[in-house]
Length: 120
Image (cartoon, rainbow, N blue to C red; front, side, top):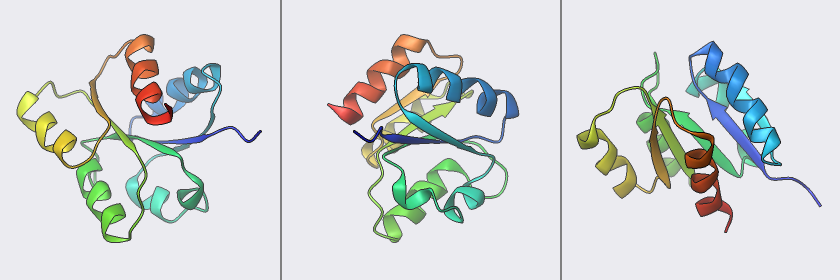
């Protein structure tokens, strides 16, 4: 059986290195991208089953990527991650269709629970 593919988009290199290892432990395939543009231009976009997406990135932000995917008709479940603990920012993302919005640093359990929402 094919493992689900999770794509991580975050401009922080330490997140792109650590998070994929954890996601693999959970039993998923994973690809990491340093920007929204890199993800949009990749062959993996159409194969992505879930997107873990940083909110604040240079160039195209996470919410802007969410809008672009909707514009293209791509319905990829999104788990947002952010270092900015702003509840006012979180609510619109969830209303816009995000599965979850996790504040960095988040626990392994919080991530696993968000992924269970996507794949249950």
